[in-house]
Amino acid sequence: MKTFSVMEAQHNLAVLLREVEAGRELTITRRRKPVARLAPVPPEGPVEFPDFAARARKTWRGPWRGAGAQELVDASRGER
Image 1: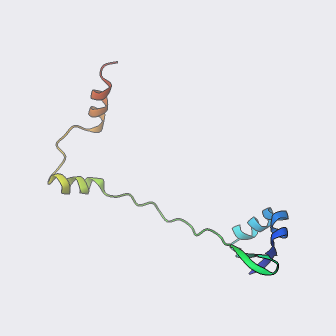
Image 2: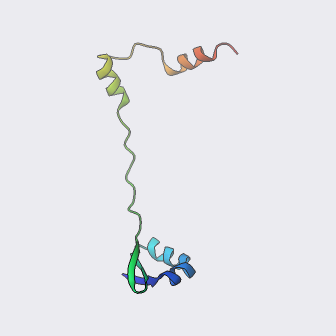
């Protein structure tokens, strides 16, 4: 792990960010004492959406019998 002083970090931020983007962790020191660590952000996994249809079936105990979304929007807008 590389170490940089606060002054070096201020003057060479772009260099430090390239190091971090390459997967390296860096330590920033003030008066030779570690005060911060720069580390790459872990990759995000796929977004999981809840199964709203299953939740609706469970809530209403069967298939949805109401109006669809388009019908509700049309009804709320009225005739244009």
